[in-house]
Picture 1 (cartoon, rainbow, N blue to C red):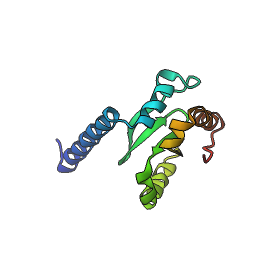
Picture 2: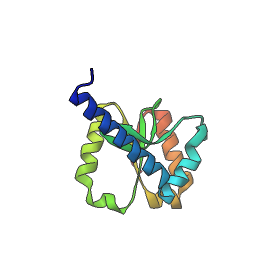
Picture 3: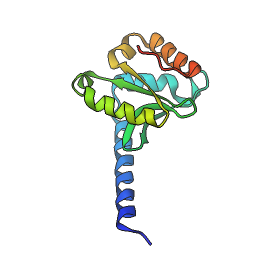
Length: 129
């Protein structure tokens, strides 16, 4: 028997999956650049997922085995620090580490950013860029 709550949860999850698919389709140039460099185990054999739902949030990139989330932030994030802090706290409660990188850093200093991500994957610590 399907209860109303179960039905509503299924609808929410379906909507979240549609949103994630939309975000994968319409990536920013920085997200496309990062994905090209980490997809298919290209970064030292680590597997990444993009636009992956975790709880009520959709994270930009995640390596589940290392529990590392990489968020590529554009200018809109300067005005939503409170939201980002709440979101990061939720993810940290679930034992994920969050590494935030500005889009322009990914586009201008790709090798430096990838090295930073690799260090975070290997060390278990997410350093601040």
